[in-house]
Length: 227
View (cartoon, rainbow, N blue to C red):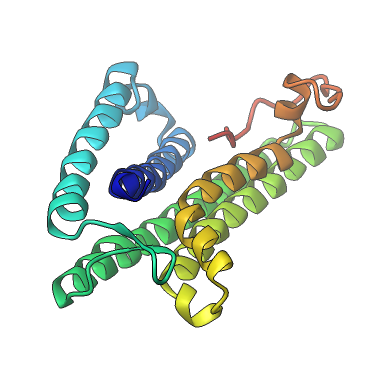
């Protein structure tokens, strides 16, 4: 199993970074739909969206493979019971700037973009003077849920980054260290999905978890909060 630890580490880290980048793209998608609705269909056409997905897979895959497989491979350390990089100054700089700093900046950016999207949706809603109060309350509740979802997802990503980089300082328990270092990348995706379910009752209704009664004559001003 130890021999396969570099493969596990690379795939986990690669999927995590893909998730961060795709969250950013989804935030840009929502931002464009609200702030630039006339350009949305051309910017995020099916062809362009497929290109975005493919290019990110290829570029991130090549970059991560070079830096985190050949230059600074991550391996299982039986003494510390964690997945760790080689203890060199080069690897420390690559991991710090190429992983922690970069992903932290991207997470902060997509949180800001989502908040700006909510602000724009709220402004548009306030101009809909012909709508009933019931409809406005429904949209306002959706805005609150979307904002909570955005903040929660950002917090989960940031906590994972901080925890992974400071695990040795947080605890000396080898079992906890092993779980947080080996499965943190996987846990963040699980929590991300749970957050989406928590703040989107329509998804829970679709999956058969709850019964969500649709509101009739609802104003057609909404933000797609699923990821």
